[in-house]
Image (tube, rainbow, N blue to C red; front, side, top):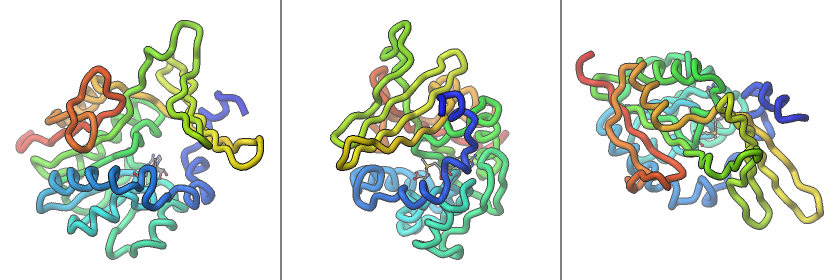
Length: 255
Ligand SMILES: C[S@@+](CC[C@H](N)C(=O)[O-])C[C@H]1O[C@@H](n2cnc3c(N)ncnc32)[C@H](O)[C@@H]1O
């Protein structure tokens, strides 16, 4: 399958039963306490005494510990298998989830916080869908409410003229390579997992990458204002070298 074929693969085919079964890695990787702890701390603080909406809630990696912290959480999620996996851990009364597209699906309730983490805005593959997603998040917020996004910053300096790909992570047993299409501002991530033998399992996913300035404009179109941008969940300073950002937007009290 060529890179162009991956671009056309629908998200619900990517986040299928197999992906849902492989997703959780309790205690390690994105499920490690040093990753989840600061994430949940900041989200709980920003939610205050209100409720939170997670766009693309997945298997509840963040939502479950946030709920355990006392914050009511509702989710929107496209993939039924990911929701089924979440349901093995919590029931619908504890964390209600509506199955649908985060760019358009509306859920009942008023939220002081909406959040979209782990680079998932890039799963929406056009600028128009990403703008709709900002608008949808904004629609759910009470006045003064916040929308928090976590997203990688791709280092395009790694792409000298004529080179299409860049390794974004390499460790024993795993290698991640992005193939870029800079004209259309998109990339296909390749995840290679090596087992005991010579062969690797490869998973590929298409993304539309967005730089922080473009995201700020999307927020503006949705009536939101940038309140803070951090390099990480511990409020590290965002600099030119930061490879990720956590951006906090808020809905003004009056608009
Ligand atoms: C990287 S996972 C993140 C899950 C969870 N937020 C977390 O932090 O672990 C991406 C999730 O986005 C979901 N997703 C992709 N496109 C979506 C869309 N348009 N609307 C809702 N969910 C979507 C996928 O099904 C998958 O569960």
